[in-house]
Amino acid sequence: MPLTELSTEQLVKNKRITSIITGSLAGILIILFVQSIHAWATEGYPSAIAIPIALSPTVFIYLKKIKEIKRELEMRGKF
Image (tube, rainbow, N blue to C red; front, side, top):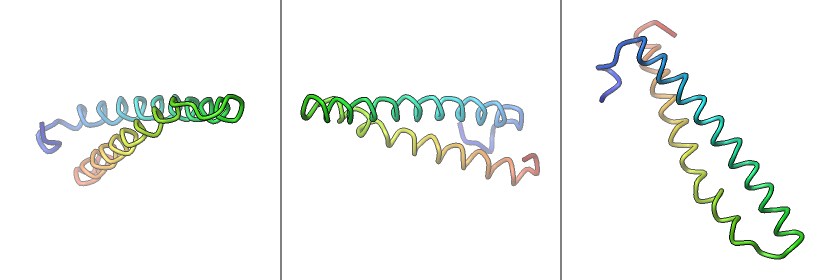
């Protein structure tokens, strides 16, 4: 559903939920990346390092969505 069709309350709720999900995902990916680098340093090249690299664009997609929601809220004068 386009952001313009959502109510202000729904936009605020979506922004909050998306921010929580994005922060959690970014935190998990950072931990996984650090763990992979540690395993790489101790055991050699682990294939697990590909997982945080492959999933990192998801964080940027969510950040873009948050930015769009903020822009819509600013247009409505509610942010």
